[in-house]
Image (cartoon, rainbow, N blue to C red; front, side, top):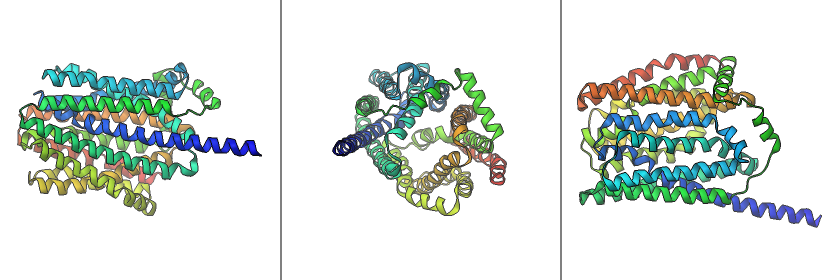
Length: 422
């Protein structure tokens, strides 16, 4: 009896320690995102490479990452566990930021170099995610999981916002001294250090061993092609197909304009880094604020209805950027957009769990990730091509924003199909 009580106390002490370390990991990861990832588009523009390269750097690496992610479960078996695989990936992600810092210091980089570094960054992050998800599901007890991750995610969002604000302040100060590229170099070094610290936190966490899960993974498809085929079979034979088809088509329309809001602010509107910071942070802040309200709204309306309402609200959002380039107006637009995006992202995530059973969920998630990456690359490339063909002036951005609205609306029939298939 006494020995059982002592084991329970040791387990609780270890669990409390792991949860604290995981929270610190989330904060460090968020610092990397806020100081590094969120300024990559602005860095491309500061190098003088233009909006089309911004779109390619924001999209092509996601496709690379999605393909690499399909092979991640096999890699976990090869290295002997989730924890070593996640630490390898996150350390590689930290290293991928160092060339960006060097190019910022040198003041020049070729487009292919940026694509290569961004591809390593996204491939490492996306390859780590499935293993990390399974690891955390085994580590965090079900009874505390919702409350813990809600608190963890909230702290992470605040850390992203704080890091983004600090990054904007650094760029603003360096831009005043005519050395903005040096500021980017400093930000990427901070981001790399934060991710390396995050990797150390991950290594310090325990990894519960579940041999039955490892055997099940070993019996799964052994090649990337087989994993894609299994995922497509799950989609066509189950209810997840309309959801994935809609999200991918909708994403194509979103990405037709999505990567080009940063060039629009910094080049077409001539914003300073301070103005860019304020407008961009507004949307992120409102997403964090309204998330609890959106969760309650989802409980009342249901995920399908919330997805419909949020998608309808997202369709015309690019048009709101056209009447005025004044910062107060765009902050108001970002408040509306942030609330809509919060509802859209939550409803999509919940629907994947609602409409797919445990057996088919992994295949659906794999195809969903790959389809999103293809749609992101396709939409960004088409939008960038139109932008360049029209001269990259204000009229060109207007055409891209209108085209994005039309493409988003074109995906609505798939959404109606999802509503009917309950």
